[in-house]
Image (cartoon, rainbow, N blue to C red; front, side, top):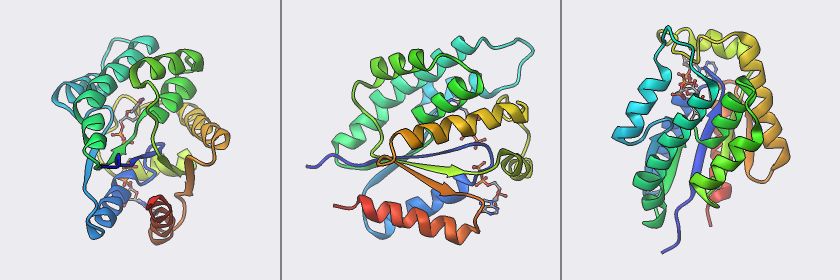
Length: 207
Ligand SMILES: Nc1ncnc2c1ncn2[C@@H]1O[C@H](COP(=O)(O)OP(=O)(O)O)[C@@H](O)[C@H]1O
Ligand SMILES: Cc1cn([C@H]2C[C@H](O)[C@@H](COP(=O)(O)OP(=O)(O)O)O2)c(=O)[nH]c1=O
């Protein structure tokens, strides 16, 4: 049994991840490809509890290294319980955010050392990396405006614009360094154009 493909969807706030996840899963269903849809932080009961702790707004300042370790704690659990078993069963995994979000938010946004993130990535994931990272790219000003229409701001969404500019730059720098693995999709386009681009990416992953 061939290992399943591991696809992640990434981008800043309000880029259209939720909207386009539905497109991705409909595409897989239409082709009868077995898959697991999941998200980070989260994806297991313990990891979802860590997500709540990470996202809730609080009086106490959250130390960036503490934040980073919580993200990777959730990821270790998610990998062991959900992602690796699904890939081993030959199913595809569609994950709403993964380690690129850590490079972007904790590395770019919080300005933590990228070498430290790489060390944790190696410890937690070994050699596992997504087969394709679908990066929805959008000016954060537009993204935040879109996101503000969909509910109250969590701890990350409450950051300043400069934070989200660094997030975007960090994502784009990673995509530029490994163009075979990343698809940068212009999320400012009309939804149907975004989805056409996503569909092309998925087609290219079929054996
Ligand atoms: N390509 C697009 N053009 C215009 N608006 C969009 C587009 N994609 C998504 N939206 C809208 O932007 C808002 C945020 O989209 P959503 O999918 O919830 O983003 P995210 O999950 O990335 O925060 C929603 O109101 C959605 O309808
Ligand atoms: C996976 C991950 C997410 N995050 C942040 C980014 C998001 O603001 C938040 C939750 O992700 P998500 O549910 O995708 O939020 P949204 O739909 O509002 O974009 O967690 C990190 O800071 N580091 C990480 O490694």
